[in-house]
Length: 275
Image (cartoon, rainbow, N blue to C red; front, side):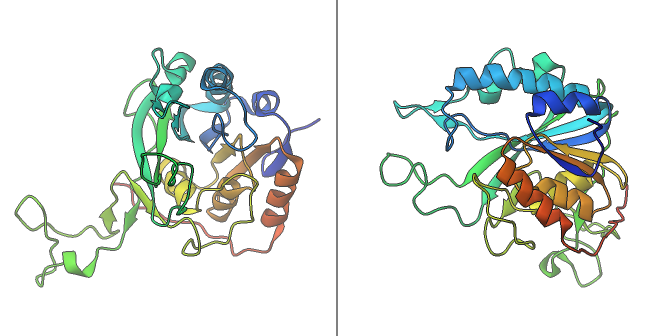
């Protein structure tokens, strides 16, 4: 079988990722969590499995490529957090060869009112997940980073055209807008700009992959999602002029992704200011 870009493939990412060795500028994904839905693996079993996945992702990236992984810690039956997903020594991603760039809290503005930690436990409703950002680059200055900017809020602008600053002085506004903080505060339902097909698990809003696609790739770069689900990452990559590869082990989810990506769309190339 010949593997090409701009396709959704049905299969195991451990088998398919090697066909794209050294090609991806970004891997953006949310793997199944241990204990989530039909995933009955223990955290220890999940760690062993994802250690192999991490090596495959590392090999699929260009030398300065970036891997972004959204995965949530889980509570044990005793009620305590199991923190081993990315904090166990030795770190999974470190063993694979990655260096950690940052950790973004993904804050859900409208979490499920009775989620996994609803009224049955002594904890509040979970409304955030960590998004880990890693790079294959050996030096911190070697991976691609384009600050994502948004228009300044009117209340931050002074009458003389400067921007108020927490430093106590006013600064000149950047022509491309304000730099964004390293957290993502996004609605997980109707306020997302794009209606996502219903997934068997749970899809992150388009704003999550969009942030990292714009931040770590340029038009024409390849973005891979090894756990593509219904294709959210691939859809955002395609709509922003990037090539994509989606890998999904569930055939019905992969077919939903293909149908979604087959819909007519207005292709857009986002021009960023690099400063």
